[in-house]
Length: 501
Image (cartoon, rainbow, N blue to C red; front, top):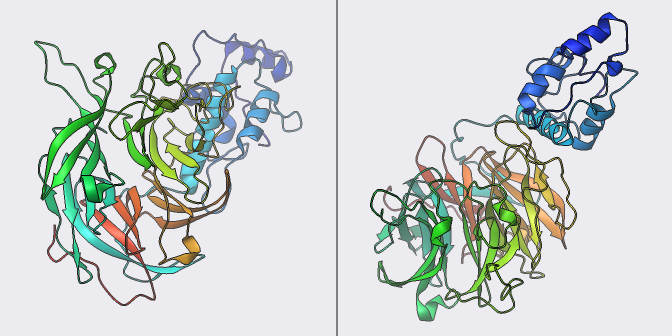
């Protein structure tokens, strides 16, 4: 940042300039009681030099396309606070609160990042040509078409593929002689409330499904109204046995307390993961900023229960007065992905930030992951969430993304079809429509590669019993699909269903 921010649109600053005083000596207005929007601050202090749209003017612009890297957060914050005498840029440390500086940095990096990688309004057509990556050549085969937001995919021990649609349906598909049949609806799914982000979310078979037939579902529960008032909605985990093509013997594994139900249709979390006898599930903060820090409330947490919903005695807050015993970690905003590294057993989670600040976290028992005390993002209206990207006693993310990529599912590839990808972490993105391959070394990510771009919002990722990589792709403005990645050297097989769906 070389020259900037000289447009101080206040009477005090203009008077100081007229008297020939240095701009930094102008009588700075006192910070208002509430932090101001970063958009307003940029227009007031930055646009005169950097351009109304950050395209540049007297000073450098932040918007560029191609290989230009958006300015680093620390360098931006330092320049805003301290100024640059040689470039004629005043210091704003006395004018802006720390939270306002943080929000202004997030805004600049958000806009700059989006300009560098513009988002596609529509997904590209699934290519038929061989695709190339650093480790493997592969083709993309479409298995099911015409779907309505396929949220989750999972495999049964006999090789059948399950998937959910957020609109409330559960389907099963079977492959015969290398060809996948049309999806078949499974009856007996409980009613779900479908609005905004609410609906049917994860499906997950019990580790011993071959003997007990249990399937687990996460969904948005909305009880019937009582009189003139509606109790709202919240996350619920149920299980039921799969009998033919119907769910029977329904049981509630987890239900949020009635007083936590809300009319907000956002930030449910809803991802499920088995680790031995324990079921982990993510629970978003439901738009109630600050509640993720409260141990007496379930939202904004990762939870661990036994397969029937009982609280394991080894949970960090089990038995603590006033605390929710199922909590495993807290301080989360909206965790969308959960995965266990088979190489070392470590648990990983991805979560949505607000505007900026998406995170990939290494999950450790009982730890606080900081939301909303520390974040790399800001509120959607440009106002600050926090003045801090780090907070004492909280865990910093392993990776964070600004602008947000709307990070989604996580999956450690466990097949043999792609040996170079074995036990590597695959990360989905909704906003950027990306599938990211990440090489994990202990608690670090040491390499990343984008495999798919602008081919659909990656809702879920799974390794099939055939060793191939399966994806649920939500297509913006058109019906969605389930695809798989196949080594380019494999025999030709279009992978399409016997009949269109």
